[in-house]
Length: 251
Image: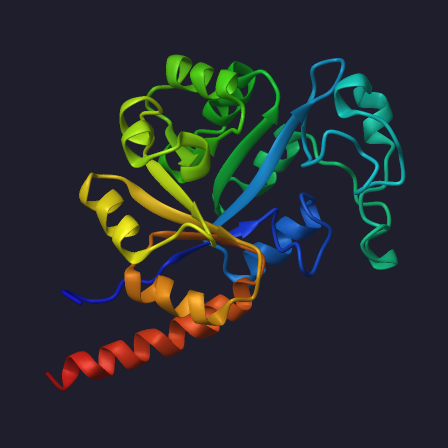
């Protein structure tokens, strides 16, 4: 390996979702305390066009309510308890409004915003309003939303997944991506190095405690890991970097 080993930046998936209810203020605060470089979160829009931080299309799994976000009013969503399902200690956690969530995070951590179902222009306007600048990147599984992002916000950093783009060439030429994301089943050393050689940053989403792969990712110098098991990754990374640094000093 040429040059010093750079630490991989840790993107906490839905906040510190192993220790607090996902996509809440509590999970964001826990991630910040734990030393997150980025917090990943999801955005959806209510029936009256209020932007919320929530992953699923319905509130059923992560709140005490039922129904589709897109069919509920903000008054209905604001009354929900988004913490008790995870642990009674988090009773009363709200589903965060995006505006309040960004206000809480601004200046404390970088962010990765995945737009699930919302007006991309309104999301971008809100991000711009908080002036996150280069401290944010965005993505969406929706082709229409990705089209909107390229059109209305060409300068904002955009992430696309290999299984969504189909290939590195598509990610570069059609998606015009800045960050190329892998999954556990399709990441390889050569693919990471090729993407980086073509001017893209690289990331992986991994939701398993795969310490063996974590070590390889540090060695392969992936730029970001979007993951749940951040504490384990940090421990593995420290061990690998100490080993590689020691090996470099003996050369």
